[in-house]
Amino acid sequence: MANKDPYHVVKGPHVTEKSVMLQGLKNATSNRSLAACESPKYVFIVDRKANKQEIARAVEEIYSEKNIKVVAVNTINVKPKARRVRGRMGNKPGFKKAVVTLEAGDNLDNV
Image (tube, rainbow, N blue to C red; front, side, top):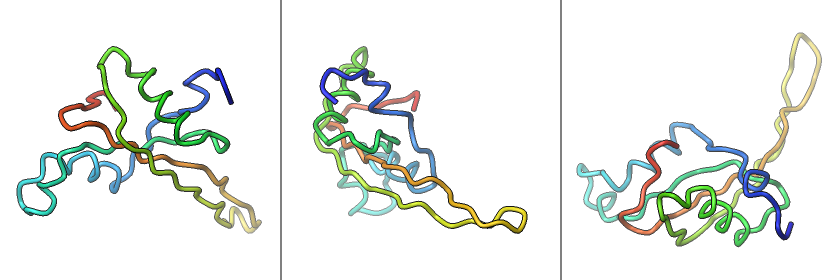
């Protein structure tokens, strides 16, 4: 995947209740242990074959106008789930998601 377009590596943000909670940890004031998390975390859906270095490079390149610095990347392979649609069995597609930790003070407002 060398020299691949960053938009092929990072497909888009993954917006769920849990990912929104991870983004808001830096603003948490109710719990002291949560308030200690100064680095914001963002969740993205990425290409299944991408590694952590490629993901970090792609996120920094996509958001280059904001001058962000990726500190860490954690990846999770989500397996396909069996679903029943109109009486027929099928599968939801699996995907790979990445939890990207930025430096303290950085943020992505438009994600």
